[in-house]
Structures are given as C-alpha cells and as structure tokens.
Length: 180
Image (cartoon, rainbow, N blue to C red):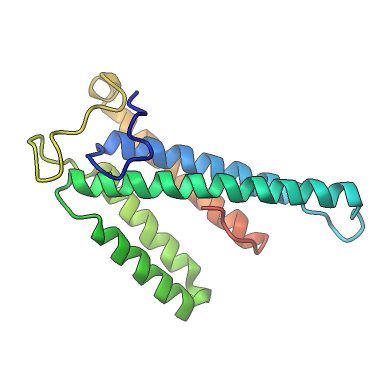
C-alpha cells in the first residue's frame, strides 16, 4: 500500500486509493458516532464518571476528526489532480454545500445524496494513464489486488456508501453532528 502521500495535497491519487481512504474515514467516523451514542447519558443514568468519559470521548473525537478531515481533503485534491482538475473545484464544492446547508438545514438528505454521488463518481471514474499537469501517473495503492479482482473496487465502493449512510442516519437519529 502507498501510505506516504496520505497527508499530502500534491500529486495524484488513483480511484482505488480514493475509495480505500473514504472507506477508512467512514469506518472511523462510524465508530466515533457509535461510541458517542453508547456513552451519551440518558437522564436517569447521569453520573460524574460518565460525564468525564463522555468529555474525554468528545475531545478524542475532535482530534480524530481534524485528522480525518485533513486526510479526506488531501485525497480529494489528489483525486481531482488525477482527473486533471484543480483542487479549487473542491473548495467551490465545499463552499456551495455550506451555503445551501445554512439556507436549507432540513434538507440534509439532499446534501448526503450529492456527496455520495460525487464520491461514487470519483471512485469509479477511470483517469488517463498518461502524465498530466499535476504529476505522473498515480502509483497503485494496492499493487496487483484490484487488477486481479475487477469486482473488488465496486464492492469497496458499495460498502463505503452503506457505511456513509449509516454514519449520516445514526447521527441524524441522535441529532448530533457527524465528526466527518
């Protein structure tokens, strides 16, 4: 696996790397949401020890979320570079989503659907194999694995989409913020 560029915004990321990093960030986010949901005290179970545990879990979730956001932004930029697009498209996408989310907070499902559609597109769109203005061809993230098993990328993307929906729905049901 090619983990060297995980925090870097320069270079290119292939669709396998984009899908794998999305899966890992969604899995960690799901575990954080699940952990916060299990630790959240109900009114009859509130104790000082549980409050400190919840505070510690919240601080841990904040720190982990910063790393997840950084990693996700970096791989998104590099995936756009792989398609010969500027990272400015990502900034425009985030600005548009934030603006519409502030204007229409009850339409969270629409933003979830748009994000999933964009993630599917970037995970499945094949990039040109030649060098472009950003870097030479992206190195394989899982050497030989996806070339031997053509169904593996589709399975990884499908599991990631299901996990993303679980994170979003579980955080909406608890009326909490998604760590990422």
